[in-house]
Length: 131
Length: 131
DNA sequence: ATGCACCTTGTAGCCACTACAAGGTCAAGC
DNA sequence: GCTTGACCTTGTAGTGGCTACAAGGTGCAT
Ligand SMILES: [Zn+2]
Ligand SMILES: [Zn+2]
Ligand SMILES: [Zn+2]
Ligand SMILES: [Zn+2]
Figure 1 (cartoon, rainbow over the protein chains, first blue to last red):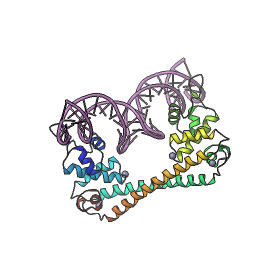
Figure 2 (spheres, chains in turn purple, brown, blue, cyan):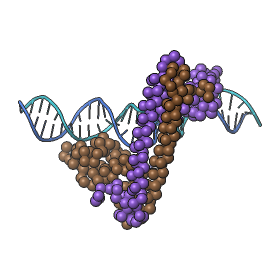
Figure 3 (cartoon, rainbow over the protein chains, first blue to last red):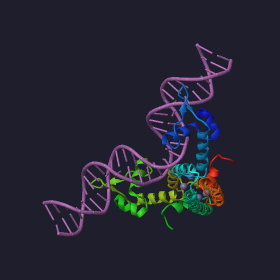
Figure 4 (tube, each protein chain N blue to C red):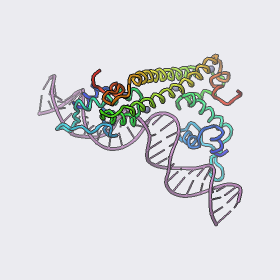
């Protein structure tokens, strides 16, 4: 498969695939006579793994780790588990932070009664003025 | 005030203040005899405004807009309002996306029964294997 | 032969900082 | 008066995870 086809099959853009090769998360594939990258099913599977992990928000270092672990069939999956749990924790903290933002934004917006800027409760909340 | 003091007063790091000057969201202050930046209360207020807006997740373009609007006292605050509402929408979409991640991660982790990697439901979910 | 989709490389840009490196300034303590 | 140390200056490069060119090569249909 050339890069465009593997891109369609995996949902990872050709440019991103080349980027993954550059940073070493994907090994350089063999080349055709005309110097086009030539991928097999193993590379496609690896890309799908990467994409699913990215969709779950795992970082590139996490994914490298997960890929390495995924090849050691006989080992315990405790590390996989703790990596996933740590990541879940991060996601939960990010959600909590965004909920704080959301609540403050909502409150701020609710107070605004569409007056002039000098009376605006949104600007008031941000500026140092009174309060 | 020198940069360190204004950094302490506003909660914006000195390096970040210099960065803000470079990108033009803060105008260059006057200098002391020894070429140190010399800030007054107006600059500190602007920095606090920026910091509060950043804490609410507003982007730099948003903040530029908010700062400009905040100076036009007599104008209607409709634009401020719609900017804040648009931003709230973005935050809500981000939360929703993270909740999808969280739920999938939770389900994945719950299924794992701490076996070997080859039996691990976390790796299974990511890899192409069966399923 | 011409067009067009596809591929190649390399470089720069995105966002909002953050982290140096290499040097200048100033007050306190000895 | 000399050193120490906190503070300041400039400029440049790095962060993550791509994304967007630019300038050119290849392959196949018409
Ligand atoms: Zn993670
Ligand atoms: Zn308002
Ligand atoms: Zn916004
Ligand atoms: Zn497991």
